[in-house]
Image (cartoon, rainbow, N blue to C red; front, side, top):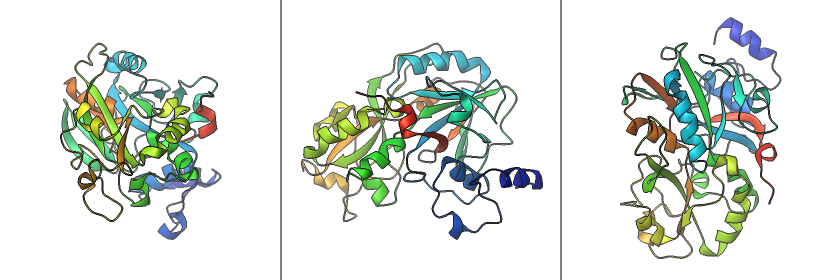
Length: 313
């Protein structure tokens, strides 16, 4: 961290300084603390379970010529692609404008460096992956890039945990499993032929209605599940529940293969829309130029809270 940046951070209440040890940053309680720890390399793992009640976001960064089509894609597919915010203007990595009614950009995300404040990034050139799980994208960002923040289902995990329904991947300190599906996206301009990506968390069948009720109000972070049950695996076009396309393979609580529990009503798969969907749509669109995003499971943690984005029913 440069002296100038360190000096600036020192003026921000709750900021993490490079001189602080890993021990002092083990419990990251705010979005700012997670971003600062990510920026200086102290937070490099999944953000699931960090900074409870702070909203987490998927990050996708595009050349500006694709921005209008991408906004339309999000508007037409609000469940897997809920748009929270975007760069305040083309080329801005230090400020955003909000798409959440009643919240301005600085309330959504205050002090930030979008090039360094997620734990890990992915970089694509002409739709081909060229960097995986890199620490920052300062060398790849240009004045023509614009960042988009898409809601993430990690945001409702604290609500599930507080209701004694903690997600299994969080308990086991793994990354949530994510799968491509056969559910088509409504296309928009350059973005054609995309399909939903879903995240999966196992639960008891008897808990489904409670889970739906808890997550329903989180519409800006994918809301309630779109499917559940062992039969949903085939309906969604998932070939093998034990082999996700992103994230960690799901396990039973004793660490054995999850798929061996097929048919067990105490361990049914529950699927939510996932913010990897727009990243996958970008790759299928065969876009030109440099495109960047978060590595799956390594989110940008914001300054707004659960209650700022909840829909009341």
